[in-house]
Image 1 (tube, rainbow, N blue to C red):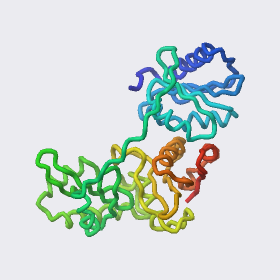
Image 2: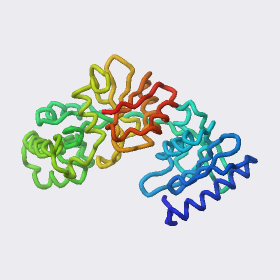
Image 3: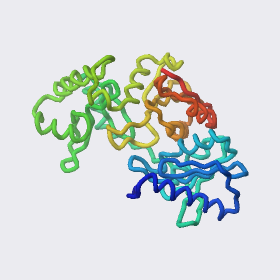
Image 4: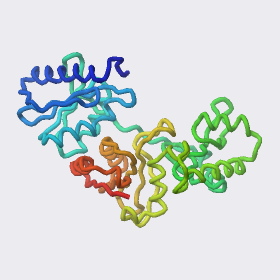
Length: 328
């Protein structure tokens, strides 16, 4: 849970905390130090970047490894010691995916405990009764996508329908709408309409907002990375592939409104393509999870040219599996 202390004040306190931790370990702190959001970083004389990660309103420490590594590589660190009070299991899972040595510790008071690795979740199993709706999704004009046991339909990367099992009746049905609330509202208003007709109407309405050059609208601000993936599925040569297919993310998406990376693979090869938009330093650690999930030999991180910065490319260069950014 994020602290109610002012973030600037919290960063000052964490700067003092990380200095105290370094002293407790008998290391000698240098003058190179900085705030990392509400956390703090400090470089010791032996070249270790100590980073204390704190909970933020929009993300926990498990989504801040990229920022910590960016600070470390910018300051020429030989190794990194990541410390946090939560999310350390995910951090410990991702750390071995880098060639830069990374130690992860769970902080209890002023005591450092080696973090236990949190394994990737088991992929969900898709019910065959849910797969039976794929043809209907296609007939309605949407692109079927299967991730973590969920069958859905997308328009230019935006989910517009999902196959669900009613928790009370056990009925399997296709619900139309963008997100759970929209699907529930749509069903209440149009429950009697034929599903294909209802889906086709939504597909047409969404498509006009997802097309290139459309005026800004909430429907073209959602699922930006998935919109990029849809573009690459149609034109895989943009990332040097002959074809691409959707693959599940390492962790299931909790909400269609979450702006998270997504992935695809080239059939017949072990090349993974991670799609991202915006300057997201944590996309590289996310890619490390995806690499492990799909056991690939090469990874391309595709992003709009404006969103690729030098430090991201430096982070990609320290991933154990060959990884590089491609601007599209």
